[in-house]
View: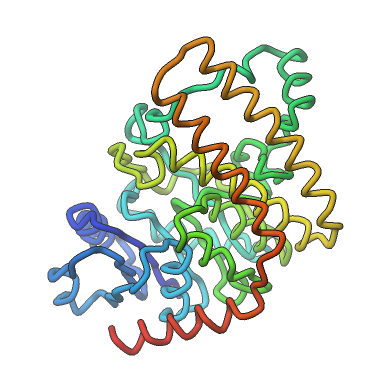
Length: 336
């Protein structure tokens, strides 16, 4: 029993294409939930009796995922980005078989393939700081607090090892993943929603998956289940200044969350974040000197803004976050 949950924002043709492809599967999902934060209603989906359509009052992807979770009625949840496309006609059938074949796992990172080599991430200026080969590259990465980790490992400041192909992992990309409903928001810090509401957050996939990994094993598949049809219109990467502000701000949040989840002193994560940030700032400056562009200057400006704002995380109190966001979700549920 699987509920498919798709969050979307101002991409009506993209979400309609995914829905159409899902309906052509050899085995249909038990439930398809679309959580839409678009500026206007998608009338085609509102009128589709096979879809549970929910309009989100917040343009906030982590919150939208939570709203979909609350509205779901099955034990397993399949989360998809709206620009995903099934790899073949048996993708859903294969996913159902996957959870049966590996009953000891509570979540699955579903491998997908980019349809384009030129994606939203290519809009960002590249870095020269971490270049190098072999042991030299490892040394540079270690000294600059960006170590090369084992595949699937989640480190401090959101640093992670490459996704394993067929093996256990502590993190996954949120483009396509399957998880037991009872686990996904267990011991969850709802301040993530507030950070995204202020448009200063990123890394939600990392922290959601790492939180899940504290309660059981996650399997990263070798088999491909979806295509990622990224047309360079990601809301995260279209503005370099805002992206870098979000990125460094979230690095401290991710480290604080890791400390909370593994019960380590917060002071350690703060000190490590400061050291990590020094090297990131140094790298941005070197890249600008080597190749001065407006994009690289905006990256530096965004970094500085996000870095100093991030320390507010140390004084903010989030005791009422769960209550607030549950109330918001309740209003969205009854208004759908």
